[in-house]
Length: 182
Image 1 (cartoon, rainbow, N blue to C red):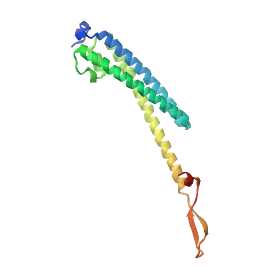
Image 2: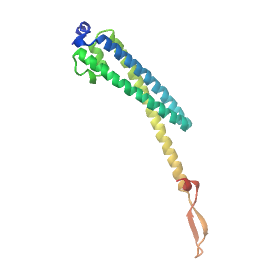
Image 3: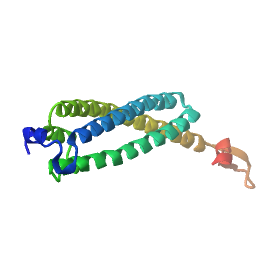
Image 4: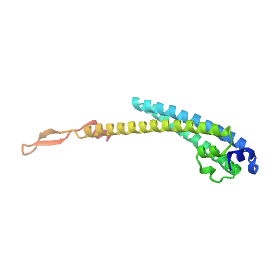
């Protein structure tokens, strides 16, 4: 179906394509807001890692879980809207198609709005991905550093304890607080 045919068939198959397009645009706007919150949360996570603030990291993890739940809720709503669009466009692949492909098949002004939303979402997703990669790298480096510190402390040199029965120095591993903890 061409864009012109879609324009004339805004009521195709009992589905109001205009309402479905508006619902999809609204759903994408909500997703955009959630992704912006994710980016802000990612900045807070990096700050908490930089400051080694365990409480802030716990709060951040809880906030990320809330945001992920919102994404899942809106994903289900978006899939339902896409199914309605597929029915209206008489195009079975809409549910699995990318937004750019959908925008090619629907009439203006919805097509332009969806393309703009797609670009904005892609930019936010790329920013979020970069920040999350950086946070993962920082966390790995921090973990490696802490493990190295504990390994250095735990591998303390031997120390003389007393002379043994044959007059030899008896040696033992140096005791430290790491032994008590670990």
